[in-house]
Image (tube, rainbow, N blue to C red; front, side, top):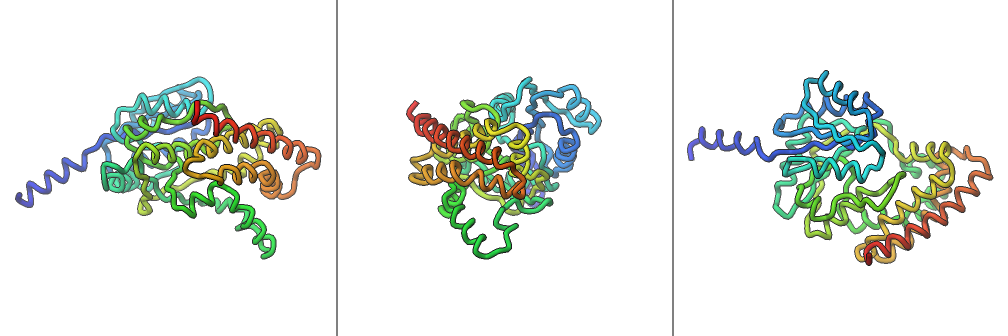
Length: 321
């Protein structure tokens, strides 16, 4: 093969595969969505479509895409459930690869070509996730504690969480700055739709089910994305606004998504439920800098126990259903 032929072949291969860039959003934060769309438009890899899965605001999103000279497919659900909304966009997507993106991220110009390179390491690689940088700083409670004895206590308590076990066992999971083979998403059953908002940990659940479906998940450290929302702090503020019952549902869903995977996580589903029941209210208190009325804190504590127990039972039963 001549050098010229190799160059032509390389260019042809670089046009492949076709990628669906799926943005999962409420459709309300147009400033963040604009940033993300601009970063998609700047990608060096151009063989993609943009699918925006949204709760509402489809007309504003169409105008936004038009102003950026981008052709976007808008899938409007009319309600907010990130799992159902995301699934509708994945099913509608045309790409053999699907990038799943939250609306508050911004991609570096080579993000797409780098994650494609990572996922193409082997056919058994189902997903490749990128490095996520948070310009607003770490949300870790430990990072904000300067008293060594208290730091030690918080670290010891965090061992109860499923996240600690997953990191220690090097079980690859992802958040929504990831590219996956569409076949892997379909084989895993897409996002679990047996939950209602507030939803959390749905991405971890999907990642673990993709692993069970026989696919590898790899990290792609050279691909970088910026993430502009402090989700844990945002959820803490929402708990104050919406009340203890909202917090109970959040805890229930978080416990549920991990409890489903007792075959992978074992006794950790119990320790995670224990953390959610008894220590998540304390974490909420620390995130809000002790700014909780005692009666509200007691109510949150009671609802945390109820939500964690319900989620644990639901998760265990879900895999037998």
